[in-house]
Length: 266
Image (cartoon, rainbow, N blue to C red):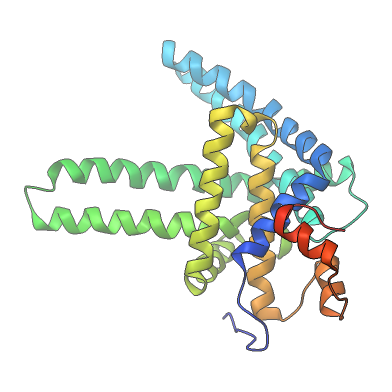
């Protein structure tokens, strides 16, 4: 059961976004490199998917599943590096990405499947029940239930992978804890979700999704998770924030930087 630490302020959306932008700015090389690994594993999926649209066959479907197995563990590597960046660890190397894949690939695969199956099933149900909504009030109720399932899922998924990396939990516990965190911090999680969608839309339109989009979302979710967890543990694990809490006063330069260049920090 989650217990709130009353001595700690509630999670800050602005701080989570600020650190996400700052982490991206200060670690652009690592962000791009890790994202390119994910893109490399995604390209076979895209090629096979296009071929399936032209000529469907069970063999191609199996091949797509095999390509997906390569794609989802790459997320584990990205989130391991994202967490290290978010907590301001200075020694971050390529081996961290590979170690993340080795340690978390099974859970990452299961969570990735969940992230595909639930929206697909719930979305299909919405369209199906929407067409039958006029025939029965019971159908309307089922349609509304599916809407809430999608809402709860998209809120909870913000914490899936950060929990997988930051805590030793089974899949069922990750799902349950993610939902509890989302429900206990609805306004914060909803704001983070909107910013996450904005990043994905912007990166997809510009093509940056293949260069840095996924890593930016991972950094956003990692920073959001750190903000939320601090509410319950009472501990700040970011070194920069620790220095501020220890009494370091801000100068005029710091104020101007935070106002006009919030992605920059010492």
